[in-house]
Image 1 (cartoon, rainbow, N blue to C red):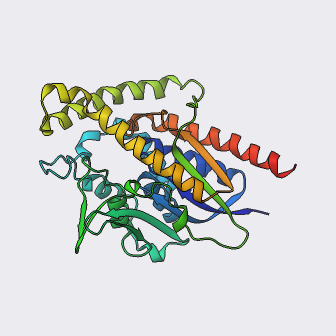
Image 2 (image 1 turned 90 degrees about the vertical axis):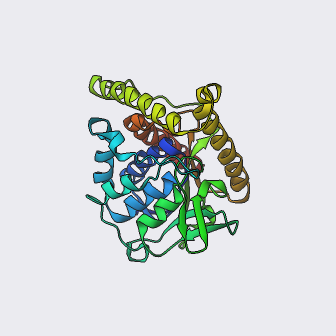
Image 3 (image 1 turned 45 degrees about the vertical axis):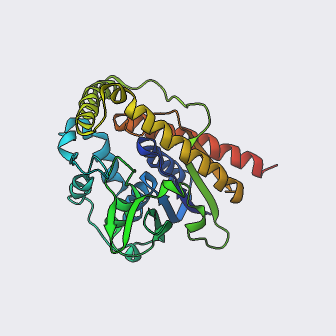
Length: 295
């Protein structure tokens, strides 16, 4: 009999791609995902899964380096962020249609933060894409979403592991995927030649990407050199601390930890590597859970 799973997916930028591998492994091992709550990248992957479009999304994200990646980056001179982020979601609409959250086949929640009212905002209805866009608005990187008297940013600012917002049913398991965990890095087997070549191409493009961001940032030469490292480390430290506090209040039945050192929040060229890491770590964690359950 399938075990029901209430699944919570944390934010973490490119590390959140590991959620795809975790979900595939859960399904492979017979778990039935009955509800999803996510923050930032977790809200994106969770929303795509709830739509039943995971295969299309996985194939697309793995081939981004073969396309005009940076045609999807809509730079802006706004002081609230350097990228609008709307162009990516618009492109996704070409193969993943928007829908209302309440019409999804399973309960779904996406978490954002309202800077004006200083509170969490949990999307359980309305446009799925609007909810995702608000949830992924990393402060100073993606522009916030203005909505009525709200200014919405990445939910990780307050709640990067929204265990308190996932829908629970009788006898389900609370499964949490934490992609900012302070654990050793899992390294998948050596990637094949084609994947390595794709990563090399993307690495060159990501350097161009950083160059564009630096050009639009108002910092002096000394600050430019450490800007992204500083931003990455600051966000990681903040979300890791908040996650640790949340995990002290809620104890998941299964906690799948992906190392915060696996990659930078911007390293989307590691998509295939992160998916494989998610699969392998999930497999090991589920095996450990079964072993403990039999004793």
